[in-house]
Image 1: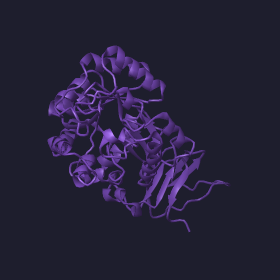
Image 2: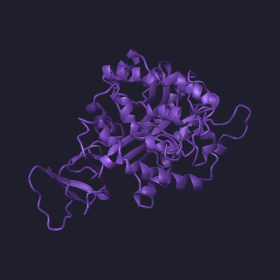
Image 3: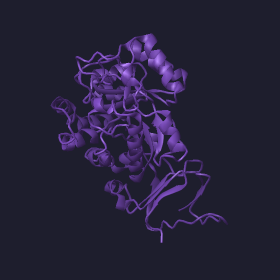
Image 4: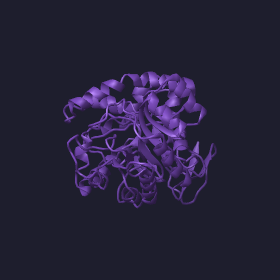
Length: 390
C-alpha cells in the first residue's frame, strides 16, 4: 500500500503508486503500518504515586514533568491520549503549538468529586479548604457537592476547555478516606452532570469499580465507565444495550504491586488493590461476552510507572483476541473520544498518525510493547521516529 500525507492529514491511500513532485518518500517495505495508538485513560500530571503529595507540587514542576511523561507516551506509539483528570488547556495548547512534544491531548479538566470522595485527598483530620487542591495542576480533581454546585463545576470545566466530564462515582485505591465499596454522588447529582455534558454536546466518564456504582451511572446516562473490575453479567449486558463504553485499566494495579512499595505507596492502598485486582480478568470476560465496547486505558501514576503503559496489551491478552486488543486502542477508542474518522484509522481525511512495526500485531501483539519493534512513529504528519532512515 501507498499513503500520501499532506498538511498533517492522510490525503490518499492506494494499492497503486502515488505520484507527487514534492513529497518526501519514507520507505516502509517490510513493516506493518497501523494507526497511532490511543490510550483512553491517562493522568499526564501524575508523577508521584501518592496523589495527595502530587497535588501539593508546584505547578511549574508538574508541567515540566508532564512534558517528559507525554514524550514517553509518544515514543511508545501513543499519538492520542485522553486525560481522565488533572491536565488543563495549557498543556493541550503546549502540545498543539509544539512546545511540548507529545500525543494529542483530550482533557476533562479536573475530575468532579464529592467531599470525602475519590478526588478528596485530604486526610481525615485535614480541614483545609478543598478548593486549595482543586486549583493545583497536580490535583486530579475538584470537590463539588449538591446539584447547583456540580452544575456550576461542570460548566466551569467545559468553559476551561474540557472535551468531556469525569466524575468520581465510587471509592478508589489512591484516595485516603473511601473504601472501594463506597458509592459516591447521588443519582440527582450524576443526572445533573450528565445533563450539563449533553448541553455541551459531550459525555460523562465515571471512575467506578463496583457493580452497584456502574449500574447507577449507566442508568443515569454516563457513557464511559472506567475500571469496571466488579461488573456483573447483567450490568455488562445493560452497558451494551445502552451503547456505553468500558475502559478497564489492568496495568496500573499490576505495576503498583510490582513497584509501589519502593515508590512509597501506603499499606492501606495495597489492601485496596487486593480488593479489585484479580477481578479485572473476570470483568473483561463478562464485558466481552456481553458485546460491550471496550476501550484501551492504563491509569498509571508516578513517573516510574508510566513506562509500563504498553503492558496493558499483555495483561488483556489473557482474555481478549489480538483483533479486539488492536481495535480497543484504535477504532473503539476513537469512537469513545468522538473522533471517528479523525484518529484510529489510516484513511483519507484522518490525522496522519501512523506507526510502523516489525511484525503484524494481529499475529503478535507483543510487537506493540517494545521500542525496537516500532522503528517508525508519525504523528500529524511529522516523523517522530524513523530508525530505518539512512
